[in-house]
Length: 115
Image 1: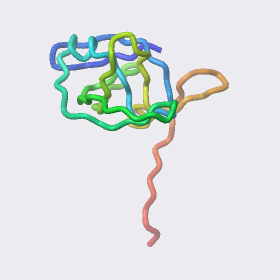
Image 2: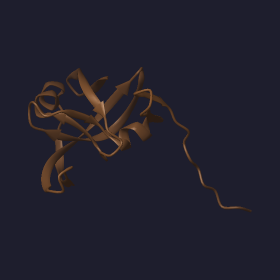
Image 3: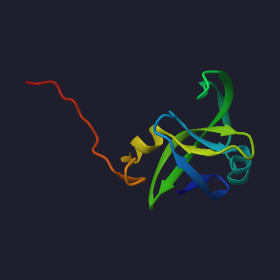
Image 4: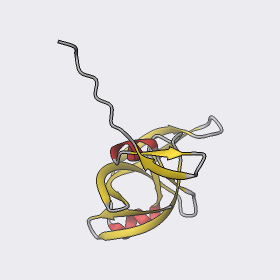
């Protein structure tokens, strides 16, 4: 699916794979540079094979179907598959329907103390 990533210098449309097993969204470094994202630190991440790696992060705005929200993204090397992670999906109120292979609206959960 195509996801629009916004930064201080504009936006870029990025083909991404929705991955509810990935915590954060990952974009290529070339996209981060194109839209002017400012790297804000590094995060230790665990890869699918169990290995660990330190990856640079930035704050961006991500837009899907006209709904836009600020999220933290990981910056990967050029050519790496871009992943739409769980926190971005949750922030935008979306969930993955694996049977129909599409995104659907999701309910937000609010737990309140009983009175």
